[in-house]
Image (cartoon, rainbow, N blue to C red):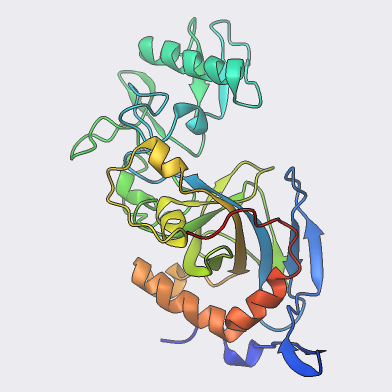
Length: 322
């Protein structure tokens, strides 16, 4: 199998440090993202096409068959997430858009109560509150009107189907959970919606390889770009990724609170645009991600180069590794 990144592209830049030669980051381009932290994205203008950034790592449950349940909108007992995180916009009974932000306190309660009213009306779109869930929960026509898709069989029958922008099996229908990337089974990161970050005219997109490190315990994991999220938010990963970076095992029966507790204050991310492993493998496993991700990372410059890029970061490391 051909390597995803040719060794001829590797260009680890060297600089003199304390009289010796040490790898430098070598990402000589940069831009600032629109998130509240104004995160700097560093870009390779030469050598291996790549990008680097430092951000926190919240946990994204999308793609898991346990993400959202119609009768557990707060994630209190059944779901791994609260339903507000699956809703794009909310409307009152008159059709007025009443979407609010941030989704805390009274605003969060508005999302929950609007969802419950829409659910209790059996999703009648006129004369009742309604919600949209574009890209997060698919809808299909049932009984003459659109309703959100439910998993129809198996241990998680009755949960909502939870989408990811990365499609792992296009042979599956839109309302089949197996179509999407499972947050419990795969390491993946989330890109901001609409982001078109590029290095040397190569645009980072779904399926591309990523290396992620927890600087507090130096755990390194390999992942893919698996989903899109808030355009103004940066720093999300799957349950499996967050667990690996925390050196914790997951059984699959975790609660919402246990999943949220896996979030990290800081992570280092190196992304390799246009390395989509679906193009060479089709179907893939986490073993494939680990193997090809490590190949790409080592050819890029590995731990030594990542350490040089990390020194350019600004986040404070307040927690001690456990």
